[in-house]
Length: 193
Image 1: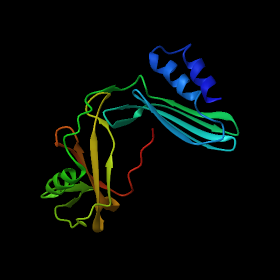
Image 2: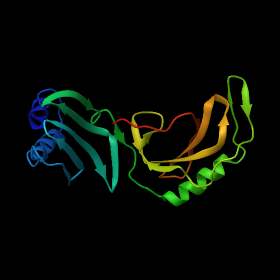
Image 3: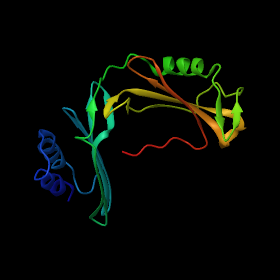
Image 4: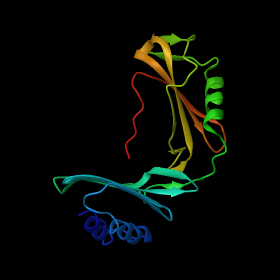
């Protein structure tokens, strides 16, 4: 069913990636989950009975750009969701010059002297657990629809602060090491493709 959807998309979109995706889809069994990487396409198919999810994302130089992708979700063999961000995004760079360890160090430095306000309450001093709660590599956009590699380092705070913040996340551009943002959080980070 997924291959048929990709084949029909070729009537509405141009680009060689759809023919490549269709060819990769022909390698997917209807009963097995699989991961295939060929050229700049990484296909992940997760299948359970008549339910399945297929994610075909752009990849280059070991960097997976999950939002530059085509995602198909099937329930009882019927397409219930399709997200196509392949032609929406461009790739700025695939260079990763900052390791996860360096990103953690840069994130800690960014927290020194950081303050925020929520509903008139200013937080000028806070404590955080120096061991990150998570270090996630997730390419993101800067000012347009061009993707760049990014680390997101999240720390637990020692208590709940203004705005319900119990975590703080620091986004670091993985190509340059620049701090993109510091964000107090009242919930974990989630990503959708």
